[in-house]
Image (tube, rainbow, N blue to C red; front, top):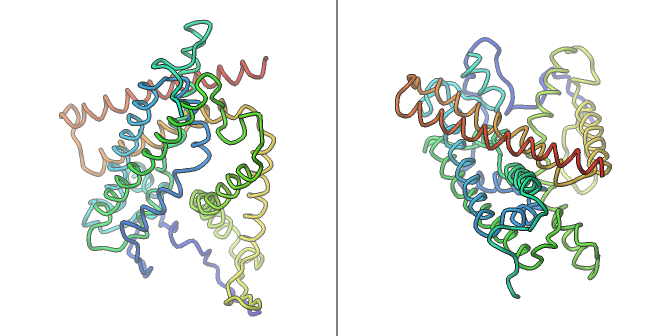
Length: 363
């Protein structure tokens, strides 16, 4: 086992300069449409899928599926806008690359028999129905966005063709595949259970037989989230580790890298900071997930909090700045209407989910 004393944190997709454009690096980008599709679908399809059937049950056959298609189209539209922000100041000719969502903000802004009904589950009052609908919208909004990892995925793509063109194509394919899967997942479960549709598709049925089927479902979730968890966690890992490395450049525990050779596997580099920080992070997030109650309400609150600012507002504002869209032009007005409409939907979902969380706690 050897040691390499390098002050450079190994986060090539996230490094940026504070006062100048990101420059071309020596990273050999080999990604294409299908690798981007694999990354996006892996990152998007996660725990949000577990509440889709319940969401369809609240909205009904027509509104439930229309809501999925509506939010899918919103996500795809904002993804198209965000794809144009990978290179700065021009989406195709650059010359600078923004290799993370945070960097893009910094560079562009800072500078059987079918059951159920058409209207969903019956409630005792219109107010209760309104709150359940708002929670359902929040849950669906949570299930779609991938804006935080879009720029990182785009940074893996080779050119030509231009990265933003490839990423738009990959986003279209991924959203179509994901939406098709979501429609089947939400629709079939609502068709089977109607008024008894559970809030959590995997654990909300109240029975655990046949056990092999539950075990198989758990294994599939683990296999999927092994990749999805890493895709979503890498930006956080990179930012925290880079900040610590820059703040304490002379501490060996933080900056030294060791070459470790184990039997039967190739040698690999090990950094003690990364090993300790990432282990503690995974343990903490797992513990929080295990003790946190009220699955649907929490999912709705999280969806309401992050959907509008990260998926709608920042991509639109970055697009305005990137393309120099003048105020009160047709495109400016349409995107402002788009932003404001999504803000209203997001606030409706957030307020309803908070109300549901409070009601669940009080009861």
